[in-house]
Structure formats: C-alpha cells, structure tokens
Image (cartoon, rainbow, N blue to C red; front, side, top):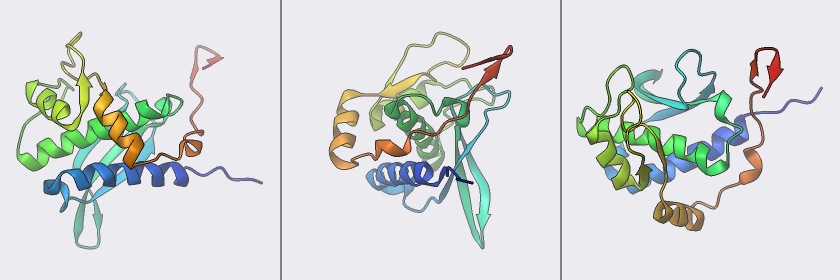
Length: 165
C-alpha cells in the first residue's frame, strides 16, 4: 500500500499563511489551524472561523480550504488562504466584514485590497466575495515565498450525475 498524504500541501499552505501573518503584526498573537475538508452544502472555496480549536490553553482560529477546489491552479488555492486571512484581519481589527449568509461588505473589500487581492464587483448576494491575487502581491509572493508547486497535485474527484470531474 502507498499513502498519498495531504501533509506536504498543508505544510505549504501553513507557510503561506505564516508569510501573510508576518506582514501584519496585529496577527502575531493569533494562532490558526488550516484544514482541508469537503465544502458540503456551503458551496464556498474556503471558510474562516474564529475560536474553533483549542491546544492546551490556547484558542485557535480555523481556515478551511474546500477539497473540491484543490484541482485549481496554485495561485487560486493560495488566493483562498489569503482571502480567509483577510477575514482574520477583520476579526482582529473588530470589523464586521461579512454576514452569516456570506455577503462580503465594503469593509471586506477594503481589507482585501489592502492585502493585495483584486476584488470583483458584486454579481450576486455574496457581495465582494470574489477575489484573486493582484499582480503586485503575486510578484512579491513569487519572489519571497518560492512555492513548492509539486505539493499541489492531490485533489478530490468530484462526482455529479454519475459522471466524474
């Protein structure tokens, strides 16, 4: 038997999160757990949940990446982590950036653009939820992070209507 592990991918995502965290000193005291799991009924690429885990006496936040989206290009997967870290930044700053139904407001947009994401104009009830890595952030990340793209090769097969994607 041969086991393909998600650990290398998780390590790389943690490294990227640490790089973003180092850029924003107010995140220094935050502790996070990055997980990969199915999106279920939420239909979202990722999810940030504050105060979801505990390690001894430390409370940790969670960033979830949906396994259904791991087949995407590397920069899109990295963009999910950065998008969710924008929510963490809003939480630390005491800013309400999204509603429970997923509507991302102008406060989220402002933080996302500050971090270096490009924010699309709202096209549905989710508001400013659609983001991508802006050119300046991408160039800086390529220079400073030096991704191990080989670990972004394991993803969940999606089955719909008796077909496989």
